Image (cartoon, rainbow, N blue to C red; front, side, top):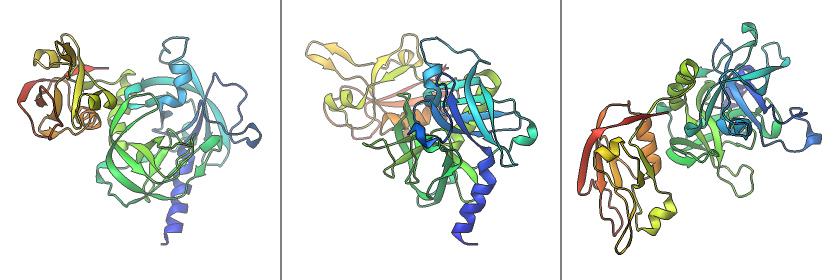
Amino acid sequence: MSVEQEVADVYDKVAPAVVNIYDITLQGRVPGNPREGPQVEGNGSGFVFDKEGHVVTNYHVLANILGGAAGKVLPGAKVAQVFLQGPDGIQRAFDGFIVGSDKARDLVVLRIDAPRDQLAPVTLGDSAALRVGQSVLAIGSPFGFGGTLTTAGVVSSLGRGFQSLTGSTIGGGIQTDAAINPGNSGGPLLDLKGRVVGVNTAIFTSTGLSVGVGFAIPINTVARVVPQLINSGRVSRASLGVQIAPDPVARALKVSEGAMIQVVNPDSPAAAAGLLGTRRGLGGIVAGDVIVSLDGRRVRSPFDLSSILDSLTPGRDVTVGVVRGVGQSVSGTEGDGARRGSVGERY
């Protein structure tokens, strides 16, 4: 079978599961209407997760209503209009009700009351099995044009950290050169067997358009988060109880590798272990402890720390390797301190 045939078969298989999502606070929008011009804010993609009508998308697609002046949106509230093309090829609109959200991982689960025979859930793949150079493609709604298949691309890099539009740090991301544009957010990144391997989330660009550097949340992360959102509306994840300094702050204090602690939260696992945040001393600002390893795994950046924490269970004992008293670049060794304690829980 030719690659062209494989791509066409993937589209036929997965397109009925891919939805176009609009924030309900943006009224009068028609999907894919060229006369309206590019549709970016409050418009995105998503996919049907199961036969119960659960739909997965990015938090930032609905950030206007979820984080707006109206305050906290309660579970069950109507937040979106979801356009679904059923197996019969007819596009229908459904109200989208919030089930749960995880802003830190830029994920939201909605529910639509669609007949079961109109729901064709995706098949989840294994992002841990991906290889650099492997072919991938995306289906979504760039600029509001639903059901669009992007040019097939490849996995450019794995384990890539990136910052989502929610401002959160996401580690372990998939970098791809598949054409991801505004409106593709929340849609599936697929392998050539039609399995979802990631959720398209961000692009690196100076123009606002795809330049061949896109990022997706690994589906294995999504597979851990989404069931929790469905069951309880929130996510429990491991935490040290620290705030990590932004890169410009770390660089200003001559920290080039690792994750420098800016603030240690009171009564946190980090505080119990004796970790120190950035503080003012007699000679000026003193760099906080720099985390260079966690649970035996090297931490080269805040993205690494985030990725490792995502894989841990709250309450588990771990060893944290730190460098204290940084006046030079961190070499990546465990430094002068190996602190042991348990990771806490945060929502």
